[in-house]
Every structure is written in structure tokens, then in C-alpha cells.
Length: 152
Image (tube, rainbow, N blue to C red; front, side, top):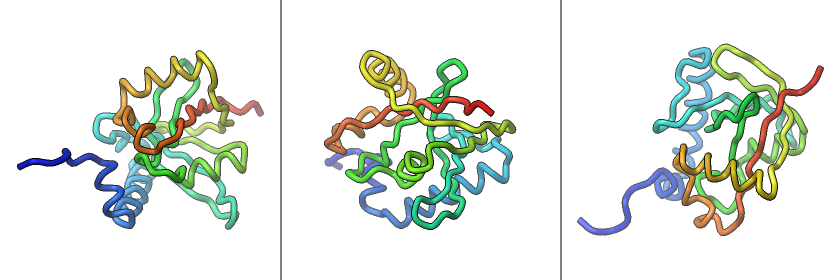
């Protein structure tokens, strides 16, 4: 058998509706398990709760993350699609969100890493998660987003 290996991004491109349903299911599973179902192909997941930028309704997404001290690092890769994921568009518009990390809930604000900090975090994220080829596939530099605790 020849051809390219089957990858998550290849499946996502061929079955976008099924991929959206699977992502929604995983977010629901993560929420109802109170953070215990927090793995996705070996990567850690957090539940990101945002407000829809157009609807104003609560939105939840299971997002792969990497811890960097007290900060949480996420990359809105959308499986290498040209369009960024909705959770990133909502988070960017709102400027804050709630994260469910295991049993802990915390308010966070996004900060897009740049320069040497971005490169350091990107290398760590790419080594620990299955996103290392998404940037090439998307044809754009993916933002590396640091979620920092929001001060009360």
C-alpha cells in the first residue's frame, strides 16, 4: 500500500463535519469527566470556555496545551487548515476566557508570544504535540498563545 500516512489533519480535511462533532464530543467528555479525560493522542487537553464573538453564547473547546510554569501555552492550529479555529477567534475578540484544567477553573487572558519567546515555546510545543507539520500545511505562521492567569 502506498501513499501518504493517515494523519489527524488529513482526516480533518476530508471529514470536516465529523471532525467538528468529534471535537465537540471531546469537549463534553472533558467537562463531564471533570478533567479526567484530558488526553488526545498523548497530548494534554484543557477545556477552554469562551463567549461566541457573534452569538454572545458560551462556547467550549478541548484544546491541546503545554504548561510553561504557571502559564498555559496553546497553538490555534486547526489541524493545519488555512482558517484559524473558532475558539481562537472568540478568545481574541473577548480578551479573556475560563480554563478548566483538571478540577481547577481559572480565568485567563491570552498573550501572543513573539521573537525568541515564541521560538522557544514553539519548539517545546512541537516536540510534545502532533502539530509540528501544521504550520507548513496552513501556509502561515501559527500564533503561539500564552494563557496567563487573569488578575481579579
